[in-house]
Amino acid sequence: MLNKLWGAMIVIGIVVAAFRGKMGDVGTASIDSSKEAVMLCITMLGVMSMWTGIMNVAKKAGIINGMTKALRPVLHLLFPNVPRDHVANEYMAANIIANVLGLGWAATPYGLKAMEALRELNIQQKGKEKSFVASTDMCTFLILNISSLQLIPVNIIAYRSQYGSVSPTCILGMGLVATLISTAAGILFSLAARKIAERGEVK
Image (cartoon, rainbow, N blue to C red; front, side):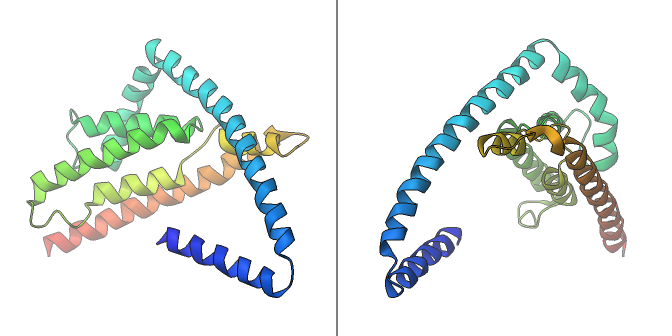
């Protein structure tokens, strides 16, 4: 769907430029944008490598495992239907920690594995014929992943630095406040939705 949308926008842009006699500008913009995209990828690759390395060092030092254990009471509160010893808890904790540290690249694989584990648990609890409907735990995890409290928004800082910001890190405070509000709203919504779903199942 997105491929069709972007493809249509590109075609429309080229057609409009042709009618207005600005095909030269389209060619220039294409070349400049390609060069800028490559430079941005190199910048983001460096930032990603540094923070992923820090994440691996923290994991080997036992910091990540300690943070995972600290998150278990929170995970049990938000995901009461997930057994405490289930592997989904480890994946969800790693995803949350990576997101909090602004490591969206490291968070994505853990998020996919967590969703896969939650889906398998959903099949076990509901049966295969009913598992095509996402469980409350799956929806809650998705909301947490999207709202994502961030202490260090690495992506935005890297983008601001790439495009010449005088103070790339000045957004730390506002970013923390914004993601704190979005995460709190997501948690409240998830808890309310779970209560409504449980009442519906009882009826």
